[in-house]
Length: 452
Image 1: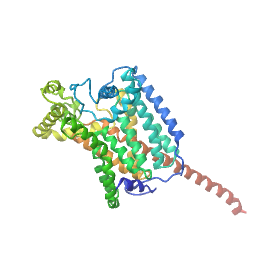
Image 2 (image 1 turned 90 degrees about the vertical axis):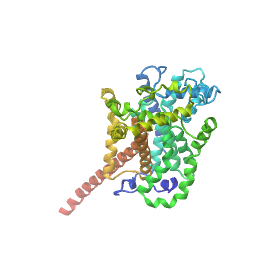
Image 3 (image 1 turned 60 degrees about the vertical axis):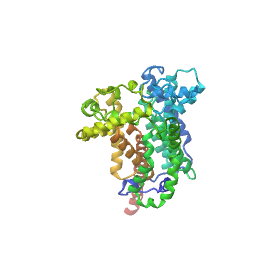
C-alpha cells in the first residue's frame, strides 16, 4: 500500500456499505477555482483580524507557547542560532521546541527586525490561517471538482471559531494545517507524490506526534481496502521520504545533546498528564498540569541547576511512569477524562462564552456523523487520511493528556467531508426536483392528447 495507490483509488462511488469506500460523483470542472481560493483567503484574513482585534490590541501579551516560538525566531533572525534567550538554558541550543514554526516566524522577524514581536507572531499566525483556508479550497476541488463544495469548505474553515481562537496565542496549528493540506494536495497530484511525502514529513516538525502517521495510514488503508497491501514497496519508499525532515532534526539534536530525539519536552508532557493533580481533581481530570504546579514537585529551575535539558526531560518521564505504576487503579478514570477533553465537542468547565464558541464544533461533529451513518457523499481518499489523523490524536490523548487542540487537527478535513456531502446533497435534490417538474410537464402535454 502506498500514498500513490491511495491517491489513485479516488473513483467516485455511491451507496456502498463501508464508509471507507464512499465517494462522490459530481460536476466535472477542470480548472481549479483560484478566484474562489483568493476570495476565501481574503475572507479568512478579515475574519481573523476581526477576531484578534476583538480581543484587544495586537501588542498585548500572548499566552501558551507563542512567546517561546517568537523568541526562537528572533534568535534565528539575529544570527544567534536556535537558542531560547528567555528560557532556563539561555546559553545552550534549544531542544524543547521543534523548528517548523520558529523557522517560519524567523522570516518576518528578519524583514521587520524592529517590529513588535507579538504583532509579528499574531499576524504570521493569521497569514497561515488564511493560507490554510485557501489550500482547503484547492484540496476539496481536487477531491471533488465542484466549486460549490470547494468554496463552502474554505468559508467554513475561514470562519471556524476553533481556528480563530488559536490565532491569539500564536499557536502552531495553523501552520500544521497548511503544511498537511499542501502535502495532501500534492499527494493527489500525479508525479508529485515524492514531494508530497517530504512536505507531509515537515509537519512532524510542527506536531511531533504526527511522526507515526505512516504506520497509522497503513492501518487505516488496510481497514478500508486490503487490496492496497500489494503496494507495500512503494509505501516504504514514500515513508522513507516522509521521515527525512524529522531524521535531520534528530541528527541536529544528537549533535548538541548526544541523544537522538525530536523534542526534549516529551517527559514534561507525559508527567504533566500523569500526576495526582490531573488524576484526582475533577476540574483538571485528564488535562495537563505544568510540573511546577504538582504538589511536592521540585521546581524546574532548581532541576536545571544540575541537569541539562535531556536529563530534566528524562526525570519527568520517570516521574510520570512512577505515578502510573503506583496509581494504576486511577488509569481508567484518567483515560475517560482525556478522551472527553479531546473529543467531546463542548467545553469541560461551564462558561457561556466557551459554550457559544463550541456550538459550531458540535454542529460539525453531528453533521459529519450523520453523513457517515447515511452512507453517502464521503470521499474514500480523504477518509483514509482522516482516520489515520484521528488514530494519531487518539494515541496522543491516551498517552499524554486530553486537549481539544489535538482534535482540532482533524477538523479541517471533517469540514471538507461535510462540504462535499452538502454539495452532493444539494445537487442531487436539485436534479430530483428538475426531474419531477419535467415529468409533470410531460404528463400535462400527454393528457390532452390521450383524452382526444
